[in-house]
Length: 320
Image (cartoon, rainbow, N blue to C red; front, side):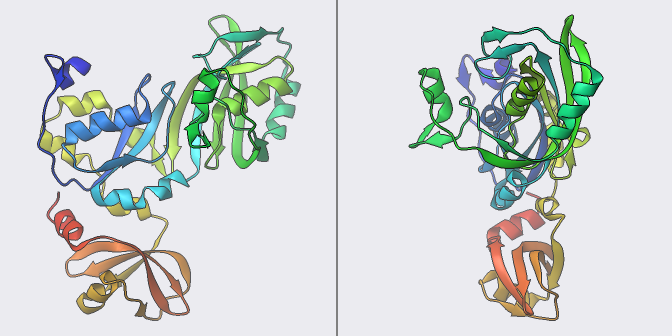
């Protein structure tokens, strides 16, 4: 793909434009989330874009990309529950917890259905994880993976996460024992660490050899597009892949304001009404219907949280 995105070794210059919406990308193997974002941003000729949570280069799957006004609500996807499919090789522990590291310990594997069921119950619900050294978490302003590459071990505090659902199945991979894992979990869960901890609980160790995110915040992999597909599309078809900004707000209660109240709301003023208290509200104008921003309702007051600018509203209405 790189040759088609570049000309004579030089990245082609593109004229950037305002683009607003959400692109569901099926991130390919081998690219970081930021590399995938930059390729999609280049293909869309977008002025502003951001991703909604890091997927390791080893991982594939659902990566919602936010363009323009949608970037104001990207934190909602960062906080969302996520679902993964993974495979962990049993009997081998690596430096990184996945197949990109070197093997540091090999042990015999003696796993039966009873031990799998025991471990599955042990790791379902609220658990504590120690973040891996090969992660983007920062210590004194520097990512942990930089310390790890320098051979420095940094003390990390355990973090509480929730495994909402866990399925474990004993399989073979290239003739070696492995676990197929289905995981639905809260934000901040490290699947590499989960695989390692499960391997230790089984007494044989493990490391991750495959990871695919199949759902995040209600967005499934079936609705995704690949970079290769985007690249072969005419420009208007690429834009047609964008979902509306308010797709990020599907768990928000909708409130619609008339023109007068909409203008005041966009100025940051609170509005009074008969709305019930609600922490998450998506606010729309009624003529024409357009997303204005998010708010919360307390004691009959609609209190602005994140607002779109007038130019963003105008551009989204025009289909940019």
